[in-house]
Every structure is written in C-alpha cells, then in structure tokens.
Figure 1 (tube, rainbow, N blue to C red):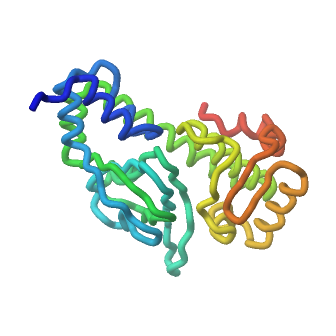
Figure 2: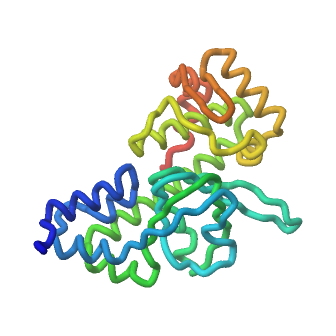
Figure 3: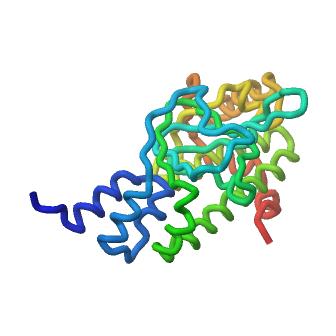
Length: 250
C-alpha cells in the first residue's frame, strides 16, 4: 500500500487540531514530513471523559499538558475547611496543566464540567520535543504568558463591583470562544449560576439578578444555559476603558 503523502498527513493533523491551541504546537510552519510524524506519535488522544471526572487532582504528579478538543473543565482550589473554590475555566481549544511544570505536581484539581475529549503531550517528552521542534518552546512560553495574563486580569476584575464582574465574565467567554473559531455571540454557559457565583465571588441571588438585568436591558438573551449576546459593545462599556487598561501587563 502506498504511504500517505505529506499533504495527507498535514491535513489529518490540521483537522485533528482544528480550533485548538495545540494546533500551533503540533503543526508549526516549516515542519517536514518526518517531524510531523514524530509529533503525531508523541501526542496521545485520550478517551472521552464525563462530568465530574478528574483530569488530575491537587497533589498529583505532572505527567502531561492537556489540550481540550471538546468540552469544558473547571479548576478547583480547596481551602483548609474543605470548601471548593472555582478559580479557572478552560474552554475547547485551550491547554491546561502548565501549573505543574515548575514543581512537578499539580497545585489545583481539574474537574470535567461537561463531556470532554483531550489530547496529551507527555511531560517526559516535552524537553525532547522542544529540541526536535525549535518553535515549540517559544510557543509554549507564549501560551503560559497568555494564561498568566488571564489569571491576573481575573484577580483584578474580582475587586470590581458585581455588575462589572458579570459583564467581564461574559465578554471574556465571548472573546475566548471567538479566538478559537466559535461564535462570539452565542455559546453555552457550562457553569451553573451557583458555580458562576463561586467563580466571581458573588452570591447566587446576585448572579440571577444581574443576568435578569442584562437580559431586560437588551445586552443578552438567556435560555437555561444558552446565551446570545445582543449588545457586546454595551457589555464592554459596563467596565470602562480605564478598567481594561488597568488589567494590561506593563
């Protein structure tokens, strides 16, 4: 049987990683056929996981970076009293697990929020893969920097009034979905209203009141977990340009 040509291999990888930030790692420009084959062999395609399953738990050894092909994952921090706090939310096409790189252990737990499919880059091959694919290390640093910036922005926004937090949350989801090739104005809220409150540091009643207010004001339409943003500009205006400037890294 004739072996597949370069274009066939490249297309297979491109389709596999469509709308996924891992795509920029798997198939950076300039890879020849042998390099693509090596990368393809390193990446593991995992089975589907379901709501409530753990990708990893706090204290687990760092074994791989994980790229979400589908579904969402929440990051949980548990306090000394055993209370869980949602400190992060990962969407399709995003990579998680960077927190374990430095120490070799995961500080927080990653819990499947809805059905997910993930790809893995094993930790024991990361260094070798960076040597084999020169652009890989630079791209990994960019992804880590972007995630740190997002976390910094969230910390700063959580000091803002409740209305600004909610508006920022919806705009952030819109922009992140859009950057992955999905709709910027129609998406599903994988978190319950109680979980949104946990994530934003708001009471359940406040979350419900704000979503109702945004809907009455014509900013959004919401049906259960499905959100349609009707006035993205209006939502962005709720947290001012000055606030957004404060969140930029100097």
